[in-house]
Image 1 (spheres, rainbow, N blue to C red):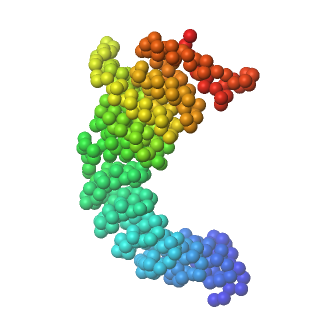
Image 2 (cartoon, rainbow, N blue to C red; image 1 turned 180 degrees about the horizontal axis):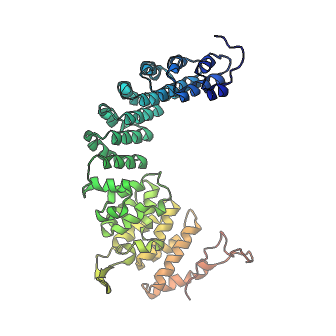
Image 3 (cartoon, rainbow, N blue to C red; image 1 turned 90 degrees about the vertical axis):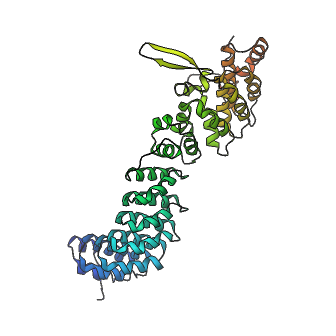
Length: 426
């Protein structure tokens, strides 16, 4: 029927006028009428709207076609399965995505077509297909979802892992164990969560370690020395505020067993990893570093309720000194800064010359210079320097404490970008 006046879609929806809304689907003059009419029909849930909505899958506007697919999914009528399958085979990605999601709402009748959808050329469609298969929960989808764990899209891999957890088939355990080492943190978390529902228990080896890292259970990671999975976390560029990341602190808490991997990580291609390795002995992490770099050759162990006793452990300083000295020349200023601070905590007098060189850091960074100057002060104050080294350090006092020529006034520090500003001992 030809409509002469613009339909009042809001009024038709309020009055639950299905016939009027169906007529509004024929308003060819404006997609902004047809689209809301399609949405309203889906919301009303009247089965009389199924066939008109199926016809709307052929609308000239992609937005209306996508809305029609969504509305059919809300109705959940199996009559829409074949038309929606046609859409996911031929239409543009946004419509295919809506059709895939709709098939997931319709249920088991749509499993076959959805199993093919994870191979769609568009990542959003593949993700939606995985989500839909998880929603349906049919074990027939396990093989396709397992393959989707290797998808190039992290979002699709995450959806596949979550879907496998929803289905709960034991055949998914091994693939999900492999996904705990995914390069993307969200995928690792999704795989670990899926394993929780599959009667799987982590072991004390690399498999269990990767699981506890993905779960963020840092105390467990310390207990089983999850070194390599923790370093993998540091390589994930999506980890924010890497200098304060739990993975870094956990590696330090592991103690001597983590020193070798940390030293090797000073040459890692990823700047986050190098920075975390260099900063593992920084002064502001002292509570987390007991028994590792900042305590040198001894550590403290609890002795009942009476207090503490000291017990010997290998001196880790020689193994750390040279890699940290090398890190003073890293192209990342944050790595150089953390290396300079760590050398001061180690307390090895052989770091004096490299730290003096770092006072003239190139490319110049005042943060690196200040870190080097502070470490020289720490070495001097610790009494580990010989008389010649002490004289060298004291000779740098004027250079390291020089002030700018801007008068100091209230609220403004007299040290500006031309000032190292570290006070040396008298």
